[in-house]
Image (cartoon, rainbow, N blue to C red; front, side):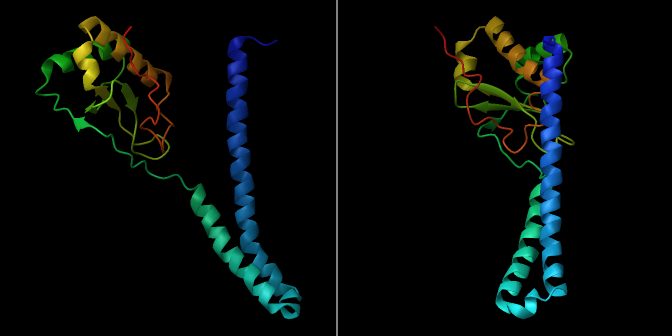
Length: 187
């Protein structure tokens, strides 16, 4: 049985290989959709059944570009459902964020949001496949009211760990979490 690190590498390599194979298959399918009309017109099928040949050709000319277009990475346009915090005016909060970021050796988020949920999350929206994205941090108002400074630091450390581990780099399309993975409940 391989060691744990090798199994993680193996699973990562298998996942990357599955993505590459799916792209190759979809590119081949799209190319086939373009080739289909050419084959139909070069063969005698179009003269035997003109309606079927024209319908298949129309399908090929619509499906091919659609498949190619679906494979192109898109810019993430998600928005945080909260209020942007002016960090120049909120020095105590900024000091805590800077403290944790410095302690963990992580860059500061470009934007900090205040959200109405008892939740906190980080994301990297914008860019294409993680290139050109920027870091954001969202903190729930109920958390800021309920947490002590030490608890807030723990929460911030947890969120910065998501940046550190790379959880947010390639999670585009839904970079703002749909589920409260970091929801806070006090016991």
